[in-house]
Length: 258
Image (tube, rainbow, N blue to C red; front, top):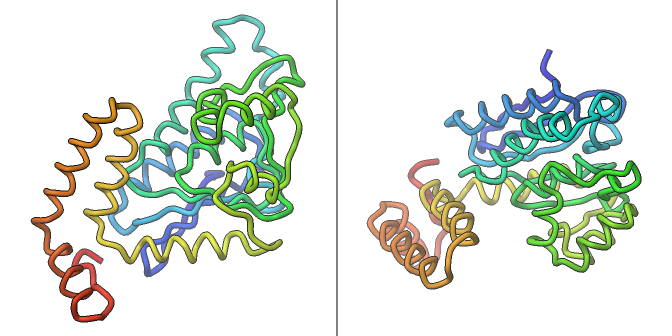
């Protein structure tokens, strides 16, 4: 039975959950299940937005450390990381938004899964961190690269070099998550946000995702040209005509692809 599954509501919001008691640790099998679920959601036309969370008291408490005992060569360590990096890259590069609903412990690989998501909400009492340094290693699912790019080198150095944990409230102050929410409400808040996004026209959401992702890797003026081209292409869509008409008529737009 898969440890990562999702259900889709009538709005196109997929609630994807890791369920690997007791702490949703990332082992080889769980990573494979995540990749399979993500691939399925991306190919599923009924899915517009994905809310990613963990069952129980943990989002994902980290990697399955029992699998580290046999990683005693550079090649073995590198090879073990590759499937996890590929799965998280699939999330980060998705053309559908992934919202991390961080409901509890999000440590090590769990924190890195959250960083791969496009939007992050955290329970105010959630625990986040990159504690791999305490094991004599470093984050390996993209944490050393996504952390400084997303919330600054100083904060990234602090978390990675100390291995300290921070709360969801502190994570919001650090800019690691978009915001924290009251205890027990993070999944509901994430679904609420996902529904708002799901109301928007699919072509515009997809274009925005692509332009943001590609633009971060491009020279600025080239990225602006890409933005102009994407904007121009959307000007030819029915959703653009409906959106402008709705604004002028002071009503809510109805996306034709919903």
